[in-house]
Amino acid sequence: MKINKSILTTGIVVVVILSVYLYENQGRNIITPINIQADKLSEAYFAGGCFWCVESDFEKLDGVKEVISGYMGGEEKDSTYKDVSSGLTKHRELVKVLYDPSSVSYESLVWWFFRHIDPTDEGGSFYDRGHQYTSAIYYQNENEKIIAESVIKELEEEDVFKKPIVTDIEKALEFYQAEDYHQDYYKNNPLRYRYYREGSGRDKYIESIWGSGEFNDLGITKNPWSDFKKPSDEELKNLLTKLQYEITQKEGTETPFKNEYDQNKEKGIYVDIISGEPLFSSTHKYDSGTGWPSFYRPISDEFIVKKTDYKLILPRVEIKSKYADSHIGHVFKDGPEPTGLRYCMNSSAMKFIPLEEMEQKGYLNYLYLFN
Image (cartoon, rainbow, N blue to C red; front, side, top):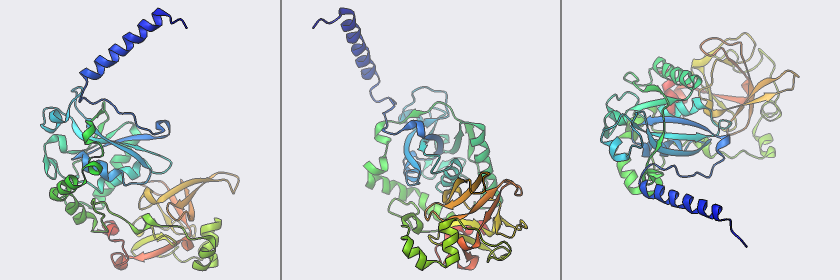
């Protein structure tokens, strides 16, 4: 078989150039290919101090597929960990979060971010001091910026933190991936990571703000509904009343003005009647005059799934719970400010937990809603 000399020469040149490039870039921030269908995923960028911790926290959130540690914020090219950590650049340590937007929303990512950092520290983050360890959200478009600002506004209105939030919201710049030994550090070096995390005071601070909850050995809050397994249809028929089963499993609708929570004015939260996952709070409830319990927002998008419903020919947005997959109600665009939305729910799909019983029943982390 004859080989074209020009093709052979071109191939040799390519190999030589590639070899030189790889040699000259040893130890630099070369992007490692990730086995993910990237065309179906979205990206988000968060700086919250040590990227080992921020990476480990985000990788525990359902819908997040990969988290990559890196640097952003400065104009310097190809910065290394030594440069950034010493404060020689304007970069921050941060993470790139690759997530499935059909499973978890950007708003949920922002809320999750604030539940795992100290956004009031303007000099660094826990052990680590300097601009390179301060907190920031790097937005890619105007919608992400609006969401980040709205979450901060709500946290401030709810007085969740004891001091003002100083987390910066900045336009995303070029992302530089950190060296390979920083990726998945908490998995590859569990003892060193645990020692660092416990000594930093991060988890003690999180507990002081959000409550103790149940923590695993990496300091990540674990909720009972995370391990929820939906009962069989036969078990659900025995567990629920006929109306509750019809509403949650057959997408039924209650009679307006004749249901349990339409006029309930007690302080507390509303949870899925099957799984117990938190859905709505009395702090976001209002009287819509429709005859069903109405809210202008859920506690968190983390527990809400939206689906298009064509049962009435014209499309409606159905609301289902994430873990139990229960039909809860619908959401409409005729609600009050600040969202302009009306979450119109069925009482029979929910269980009300009064404020005074929330800690005892495992909802300590949601007491901040009533500060």
